[in-house]
Length: 479
Image (cartoon, rainbow, N blue to C red; front, side):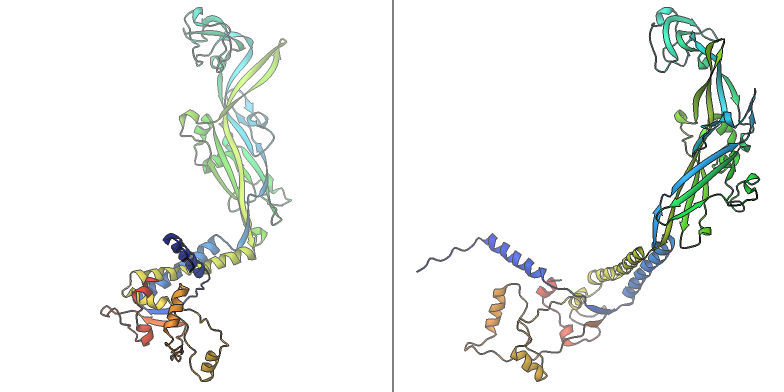
C-alpha cells in the first residue's frame, strides 16, 4: 500500500489559487454594455460635461492655441542699430562718436546721458579717496607702507597727507592721480537726448518653414529718411526716438538720464503661415529690465578713459558714464497646418468626451437611489460554453428551432465545475435533457430611474422577469 502524498502547506495552496485566478482573469474580455437611464438630472449633468469639454477643445485648443498647426519657436534673427543726433553739455558739443558705446551697432548699446570726468590724471603720488576702507589717518603710523587695497586706487606709501578739500587726512598712494573723488567734474548730456533717433533693423528666418521677413519696408523713394515709427501708419519704419522708447517703458526721462538704466526693446514675430506673408508683422513692446527699486544696484554706469601725451608724459581723462542701455530682444513663433497634430488633438478631444460617461456612471452607482439595481443592470458575467458549436446537441437544437443547451456555470475552480457537472447527471449515468433557455436579451437596455417609493426588488419600467430579478449578494459583490 503506497504512502499518502503529503499535502502542501495552506499558504502554498492559497498562492496557487491566487495565481490560477489571476491567470484566468488575464484572458477575460470586457465589452461595454449600453443602458439608457431615464433620469433628467443625470442627463443634464452628462450633456453639460460633454458641452464644456467640446467648448474647451473647439475654442481654446483649436482656435486660441491653434493646435492643428505644426509650430516653431525662436526664429533665427539679426539686429543692426544706428543712432543719430547731437547734444550739448556745460562745456562742449557731443556727437554720436562720443556718447554711443560700443559704436559697432549691435543689439546691445549704451547712450551716455551724464558723465563724471576726472581730467589730467598722471602716474604719481596723491591722497587716497575717503571712500576706501581704512584710508583716513591722523599720522604716518596709521598708514602701512606697501599695503594694497583691492578696492583702492594704488599702493600705499606709508605717509599720511591732507585730503583734497577740508581738514581731513588720508593715506598717500602711488597710482593715477588725482583720484576720481578728488577732482571729478559732472556734465549732463541729456538736454537734447530725447530727440536722438535709433534705427533698429531686424530680419528673421524660420528654417522649418523656409520663411524670412524683415521689419523695413522695401521702398525706393527715400521713405526712411523722413519717417518715424508709428504703430498704425508707419509700422515698417523702425526709426524710434529715444524719448518715445523711455516713455513707452513708463519711465521719467530726466530721472533715468541722471541715474542710468536698461530698457528692453522687444520685437515679437508671431506668424500664422496659413495666411499670406503680409499678415506676419512685428509687434514692438518696451519695458525697463534693471531693478530700479533696489538701492544697492539701481541705475547703470561704467568707466572708460581717454589717453594723450603732455610734454612727453602719459596723461588721461577718466570718465564715469551714466547712460541708457538699449537691449533689443527678438522672439516669436510660427505655425502652419499639419495633419499629424490635427489628428492627435482630434483623437484627444473625442477621448475626453468619455469623461462625461465616467462621471455619470460614478454618480449613478454611488449616489443614486437603488444603485444596486443599476449595478445589476450594468455588470454581467457570461461564460462561453465548453462544447464546440459543431457538437450534435447544439446542431439538433438549432435544427428544431430551440435554444442550444446552456453552458456550465462560471467558476474559477475547475473542481467546482466538475462537481456541478456531476450533480447534473443521474446516478445511473443518464444525462438530463436540455432545459429550455430564453432568447438572449438585446445589447442595449432601457432602465427608468426608480421612484422614491419603489422597493429594493422593483423595476420602474417593468422589464422582463429575468432582468428585474436581483442577483444574490455574491453576484453583487463582484461589482
